[in-house]
Image (cartoon, rainbow, N blue to C red; front, side, top):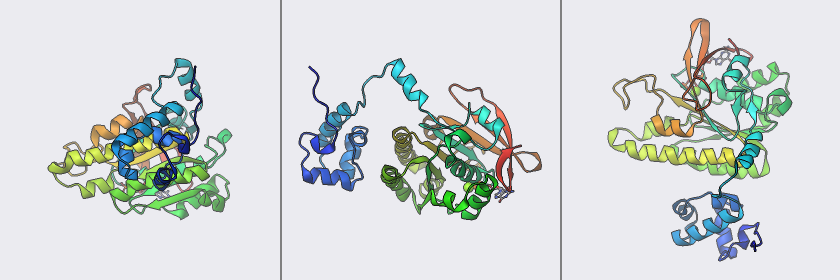
Length: 317
Ligand code: GTP
Ligand code: MG
């Protein structure tokens, strides 16, 4: 006999109005959101004891089919819903197997001025395009930690695609984060926003800047990596639950005497690398062009594409 499934958090055993309110205050309104938490996380977010949280997570997860095994067929079905977002450059789209994927994290890393922010802005504009035109037919959230969002640039990129610039601007939601703590909290805010709006892309520009500034010296490295890891996990979950593309930017270590010796190595190292499904290394090429190299992709060959950053935005190089 199969048990009747429950659909609302209020139906979880032991959840009365007070507990339901605590969940809501923490921005958790669905079984899926509760079922994908760890007990420690849920307890921190709600103030409910860890043991109770573990029970709620178990029951919520069971009813939302989390933590169960999926058949190959079911995974194929999930795979079929993956969207591909155009970068604006054909050669680069091909390199990525069609475009920036939803349900995954794509990381752009490179030195200052290599074009990371330009890619974020271009992808944000493109995500508002209908699916038939290489977009995701949705809205965008950008967590801006470096105050580099430029509405004027969005307007030029939108005009170049013959889109209504005001409409595009109205679909891009920018949250300024002044430190790594706010940056992490903002993912929760975006999850709330995604309940009302079709947020199909979430960008964090920069993913690592605030962490790098706040955690200085070797002694703090493990702590920093732990925080970045937790943040990446939240971002991956957002992408998964909302069928959204998650785009993050990352600087390379510019000071050879700093944490890592190699000036072409991204900050955050393997922690960021393991969670990002696509890592793209950007560097300046000849005549203002940018070389985009796909690094460590599990199912695509390591290769390069050339793009130009033009007045209209990112285009084939
Ligand atoms: P950091 O955030 O400092 O690490 O750099 P970044 O990798 O984010 O670099 P960003 O994306 O800001 O790239 C800046 C470069 O993009 C500039 O040096 C220009 O070459 C180019 N760029 C930015 N805006 C425009 C524009 O309006 N027109 C054109 N043609 N190029 C632009
Ligand atoms: Mg930037």
